[in-house]
Length: 132
Image (cartoon, rainbow, N blue to C red):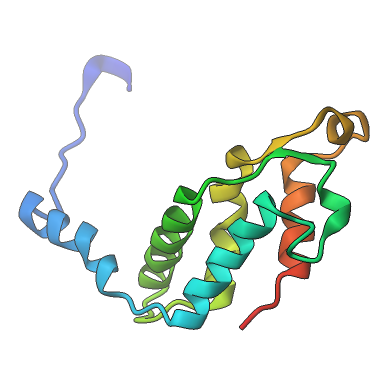
C-alpha cells in the first residue's frame, strides 16, 4: 500500500469463539458404513490385490498408513461441517480423498516409468472400492 496507510481491521470472531468453532466439526456424525468405506479405501492402497485391484500391486511401493484413515475421517467431517451438514457422506470422503492420500502413497518405479501419478492410483482405488 502506498504511503504506509493502514487499513482498519475489525475482528468478526474472538479467540474463544474461534477455538469453539474449530472443535465443532468433531460433533459431525459419521456412520459406521462410511467409516468402513474409509478403512477399505486405505486398505486398498496397501493391499490392492486383496481389494480386487490386483493391477495396482506392482504400481504401489507403499500404500497409505492407517493414520490416513484418521485424517480422511477428520477432513470429511470438517468438509461436512463447512457445507452446513451434521453428517458425512461418501461424496465428502471423495472430495477430500485426493488431498489426504496424494502424499501418502509412494509409487513404484514401474508406475513412474508408465507416467502414472498418485492421483491416477487414487482414482482407480475410488473407482473400485464399493461406496456405501
